[in-house]
Image 1 (cartoon, rainbow, N blue to C red):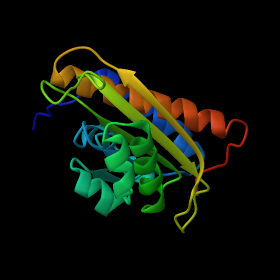
Image 2: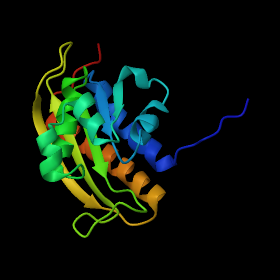
Image 3: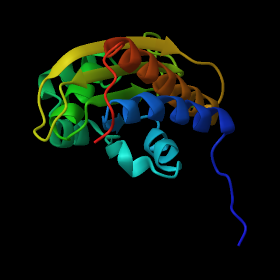
Image 4: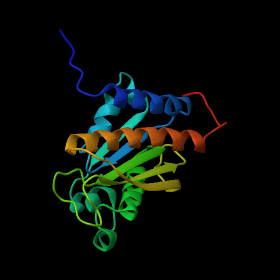
Length: 186
């Protein structure tokens, strides 16, 4: 049987780079995705052995799903809009609380070709990364990082750039948080 590679090699390389520190710390990751529609989770689970460090993924495309599945406050969505740093933060924190992950990453943005505005043009993506204490009981985030980026290109390019940036920054943030605190996987 022939295998078909559906994901770009740079995405898979970024997933491998994130997997290494997660495995070194016996940690799990969860994703909360809007504009990427599960692309990040698909990239992570494309790697053999990902069940050792991938916990779950939430695809929350609508505002209702962000509220229902991740607990993003309705007033935050109303006040800031789905594509905002407060919503990305709430998505990451919600994914952390609703999983057994030690790292949660969230993305919400305007992939295009429509849906943009003067304040949030196509290619605007808000990111959130939350790090918790880990363990068998989900908990609150110890550290949260949020950023907004603007990517050029068509819808597929915006989504691919979003996934790549989310994975690379997740590795940086997780590794920096736990630098010098390596523990063997259980």
